[in-house]
Amino acid sequence: MRWWKDRNLLAALGVALALRTLPLAVWGQEWACVRDECTYIKLAKRIDLGQGMTTSAGWLWAPGYPYLLALHRQLTGFAEAIKGTQAVASLVIILLLYHLTRRATALWSTDARLQRRAGRIAAWLYAVSLPQAFFSMSMWSEVIYSMLLLVALLALHRAAPPRDPGVPEEERLSPGARSLRHDLGLAAAVGAMVGGCVLFRGVATYMLPIFVVALLWRRLVLGRAWAQAAVAVVAAVLVVAPYSVHISRKFDATIITDRTLGQMMWLGDNDFPPITFDYGDGTLSRRAWNRVTRPGRANCAPRSDAMERDQCETQAGVAWIKAHPVDFMERMPLRVAQLVTPHSLLTRNLRWGRWRGLPQWVDELIVLAGAAGSMLVMWVGALGLAARGRRALGVVVSGILLYHVAAISLLAGLSRYRIPLEPLLMVYAAQVLASPRLALAVLPRRPWRLGVAVLALGLLVPLVLWFLPAGWPGWRTW
Picture 1 (tube, rainbow, N blue to C red):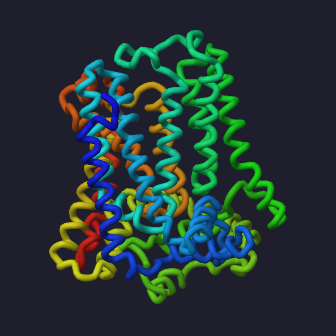
Picture 2 (cartoon, helix red, strand yellow):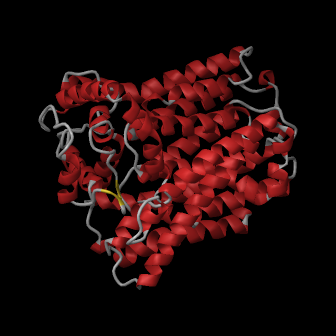
Picture 3 (cartoon, rainbow, N blue to C red):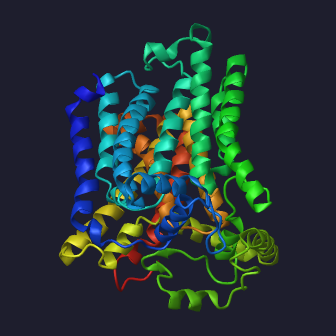
């Protein structure tokens, strides 16, 4: 069945569009920018005025989102017009999840109905996710980053065709039966999308090796696989290099896309606890910020010199880690708990009363539904990945998740960083929800998978629950 003939999928697309546009129509004119949103708008205005990418408050951010905002400002007069583009991107993400989940399910089941059911569930998980809907209505890069990441995953899955019987015949053909140009084109798409991720978020800078490993997974003897890996690397470099050369010359420093490591180390590797901005778990006012940061080391360079600040703060962060190795290790679970807290900036905005006119009980239902949905995706998705993560797709999804968790555990956490990772887990949560018995039947037969599942849930459940109460007034963290 073609996707446009699947009424269930079309219904999910309609619900997703309504959730992402109706709030804009009702409250959009009342919403002022918050923190990073304001900085993005300021950077976009400077780009529109011909100044190019600039620093802000000592940070040099990745350029993708500011330039995209600037483009919308040039075309419409308002950077906020990107919210419409993000609503469309959300629909694209739903289609990508639908197709990717069907293909992932086909790796272990030949049942076409089960594959379609899993694809539909993945589509609905994203369509009705309130945190995901909120970010499409806000000015952060999460939605665009998610879309690029999913395109890269779908291209990777097709570039490294599995040979399982449940996979469609055109994807099971031996490497020699497939066009070399076709396979290299898919590899180029993988590299280009990863390069796009790097341009949109600095954390993606070192993610390319994960995709290279996935392209070579169980294909080390194939010369075509090595050619694909090389093409992917070249494509990623070609996407990132022009900006990297330009910005390096502009600031007379070696820059890939951003320089934020030092500032992140100041936030996370300092005498005060790692800072976040989530409701109930962080500093939401200037007064609270000053109170928390006062015991810590002062910034070692002025905001106006972002390159010097990044360099000296990185050195100071490394020095702090060497001087406080035990504190550094003990903070790792805290940072990851901040990342996987089921609440997001949606909770904070509701608590701040930005959605005027909603009864209090509706606010509470939205907060509860958002947290419950995220917990479902994280826990069931992790279980599904442990049980049914296979081939190149399973390798790359596992690698991406572990890579992001490792980066956060070394620096500072924030629930916003979790948002682009949830769609990856939706692919595997949907497989479990489509048929729990069949999806999990492999665990007793594969002790190593069972061990991974127990370990993942044993770590993830308490980390997710750590800051769960923080979303409700008067509750303290566990």
